[in-house]
Image (cartoon, rainbow, N blue to C red; front, side):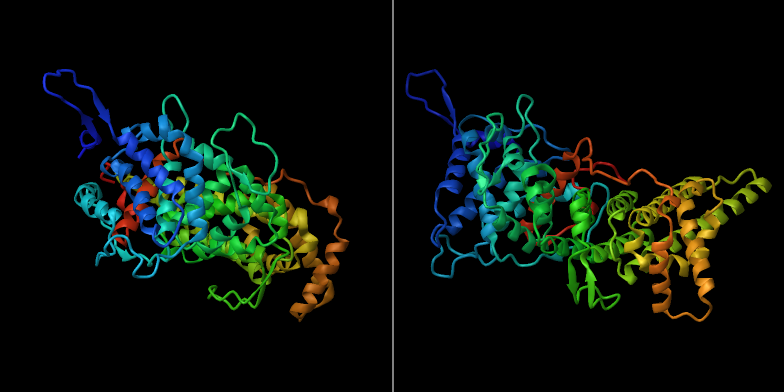
Length: 549
């Protein structure tokens, strides 16, 4: 039913004999306010656990009218009630409670303490929502003839934590009212650490404090789910207090490793989850302190990295390996320009601070360049043949090889800038990269005279020429160890002023102009997935898209 019809169920009208006035009272606002009180005021005990879960689920149900609309809802009755009036004073308390529910990850109570009779389907109100909405949603799913493979979602260890996180994400992504910003987003943007004793500015409404250490630990442990990664993105992007705290941590590997694992298993993740993980890395790499510190963290035996046994590697080198692997996967499978851009931007942000690169990481940087070089030559050859063919036949339309070539040359240029940035800023820290450059020096020959790359090739060419001559002087049949030794000696002898300085590579993440067009469908696909216990790829569903393509 529509929201207007739903509201009629909660409209109370008292009529007495002989009285023709119709004073009606809307109980929907009062009910939403009562639900907020239930969630925030009732202490969490075994006997109250399910009441809390159902209260949170009921709030999600009242906001779920979005599932019946193919476009983003910019106003609704429930939105209006939650953003003003008696519900508004509970804003910060509700956000804080939902965050603490996520942090605690409380498991359901043992059998015998349930208030409500157990259903065989593991039901509850939200399951009812999912079942009821399924028929309405199928019309949306199949509008463009889009199908998607469903797989069972992992069993939830804490339904309360999961539901709390989903409600928090729904509230955070409500669109602003015409006369007021979303108060729940304001609360998420401004909360501070419990250890921060500085007063809140009077201009910041709905502010509160929470234990950042507990929140950080929970975020590190829960990154296997889309919703936890989306929460991490939201906090890093919107709350400067959280971002500053996280970047100051000395155990960043606990946060970065789960994000890298998401990217490493790109084939098993949906594209939205991969995007979120990449954007988190991009935000982190905007900070020079982060880019330096990740090369100081040494990791042992990364079991999930299966291409090669990595007995010892820095977190920085591992990050480079995983991002390059994501680029290569994207080149051969999805060919998504947005994914390429974010990967290369993260590498570029880090490039000036590359330190003691692992030999395998250095090899992969040059291997990626080799792959791009081959692709460039192939498209160039196709363009030439196509041009020759068009001269003899005027009727056949030409494929747009010029655009393909332009994109590849942009990526090649970016890779050359990344290599150049490392050589000019930290040559003495990276003998393995110089070794990999010399080993594949022929790759760069064709780009020396190319008008698009001549300027950026100067330094790379100088380094290759300088170290090649030193190796020639040392004689033939040199071992790997001896070559590295010559490189380390050569780094000291190479005059730094001979390397041309270029502007520092710095890329900043900027949210799209209408982020709600991406985030609201994404959040509601997560709510739906959680409710029905199936996983549907939100990219495949095109949840609120009418277009057939």
